[in-house]
Image (cartoon, rainbow, N blue to C red; front, side):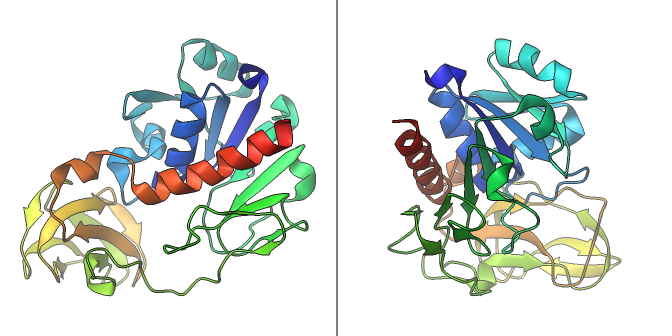
Amino acid sequence: MIREISVCVKGGGDLASGVAWRLHRCGFRVLITEISRPMAVRRRVAFSEAVYDGHAEVEGVGARLVQAPDEVSRVWDQGRIPLLVDPECRVAKTLAPRVMVDAILAKKNTGTRMEDAPLVIALGPGFEAGRDAHFVVETNRGHYLGRLITEGSAEPNTGVPGAVAGISVDRVLRAPCEGIWESGCEIGEMVSRGDTLGSVDGQPVKALISGVLRGMIRPCIPVTAGLKIGDIDPRGVREHCFTISEKALAIAGGVLEGILISSR
């Protein structure tokens, strides 16, 4: 039975949250593990916000921060997703999930092994199906997005953001220097090219295009030069800022396919 299958999702950013959301909606018992200071850009659709606020909600599904593994079952009984600050995913030794999903999206394997769970699924480049994980899911935009890979690896990281409405690099906001990020705008605001959206140690961060501010990391967080700190959507649809992206849902579909294939 699906309800008896526990899934540990490593990572609580927007793509990882799309996976957790879809699996929860399908009836799986989902647990999310996160780092102590997440820096999700698309915060309004990221369960990682529970690390700061104690709770988060994405399209009607709630997540709650727990302090220890013995609190997980209680949150499951409440119909929510428990989230635990556990960068090394040590909780897996206690709860022994049937499925482990590496959704950190670090573009490399940060320590996931096939032996971590009966079924291990990894997202994106840096993993090889059959060596690091049982399955890999393609995360690169394009024809193969969301495909379940049973042999080999996902497409390599290009370093270039996927194009939205024909715009790629210019839609991404990056820190101009190392320092503390201060924001002057809110996610969901319409911005124009040239607008100052915040600053890092006094150096302004300006919009390179016009559109809706789809994502931005939390203010008062230390950043490094070049770090992605925001995202402008040139399509200008405000609702997209608060709903799971088509990319996240496609990737989640690949993970779901892998679980169902292995459960037959």
